[in-house]
Length: 264
Figure 1 (cartoon, rainbow, N blue to C red):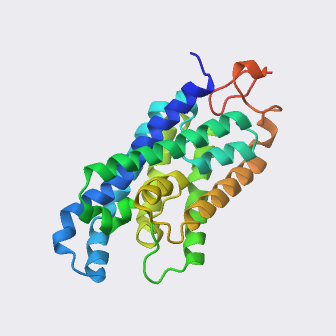
Figure 2: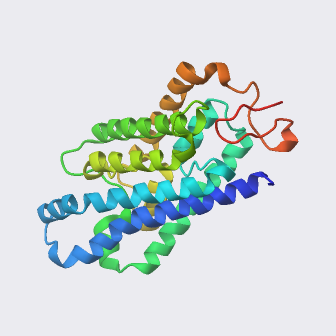
Figure 3: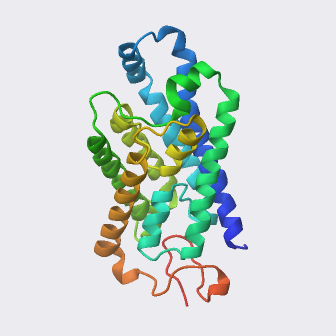
C-alpha cells in the first residue's frame, strides 16, 4: 500500500472529522432535545448530568471506531496532542507531523461548519456549537490541570497499546483508546468539557466565534500529551526507539506500522 503523506493525511482528516462531528454533534443533539425544558443554569447542570453518559459514549465509540478504521493507514492519531507525543519522541517525521496537524484542524473546522448548518440557532447558542467550556466554580488553572491529566491518561494508553510492541492489547488498541476517552469524559465532561484534543475545541470555537479561555484546551492537551509520551518512551520504549525519524519511503527509512521497529 502507498503510504505517502497525503494519503495518510486524508485518513487523519476523515477520522478527525468523524470524531468532532459525532462528539460535538452529540452535545448539540441533547441541547436541541432539552432546550425547551432548560430555563436556567441550574436546570442545565441537572440535565447535563443526566445525559453525560450518552455524550461520553458518543465520543468514546467514535474514537474507537475511527482509530480501528484508519490505524493501519495513519496510526489513527486523530488528535494534535497525540501527534505531538509521537513527534517529541521522534516516532514521526516533522513533515508528516505538519501534514497531520493541518488535516486534523481542517477536519475539525469542516465538521463544525456542517454542524452549524444542521442545527437550529437555539441549540448552537446554548452550547457554543459544542465547544468545551469551564463550568461555574472551575477556574482556568483548575481547568488546565484537568485537561493535562486527562490527556496524559489518553496519550499514555495510546503509547501503551498502539506504540509499544509488547502491549497486551495492541490488536484492539482502538477499543482501549475509546474507553479511555469515555471514562475521561465521565470525569471531566461536567468541569471542562474534557476535550483532550485541540482540534475538538478548535472547530466549534472557530465557527461559533467563542474563544473564552480557549488557551486551556490547547495548552492542557499539548502539555499532557507530550509529558505522557516522553515518560512512557523514556521508561519503556527507549531501547526500542528508532534511530532515525520515521518518514515516507523517499526519506530512506522504512515505514513500519505503529509499534513496529523501523528498518533503515
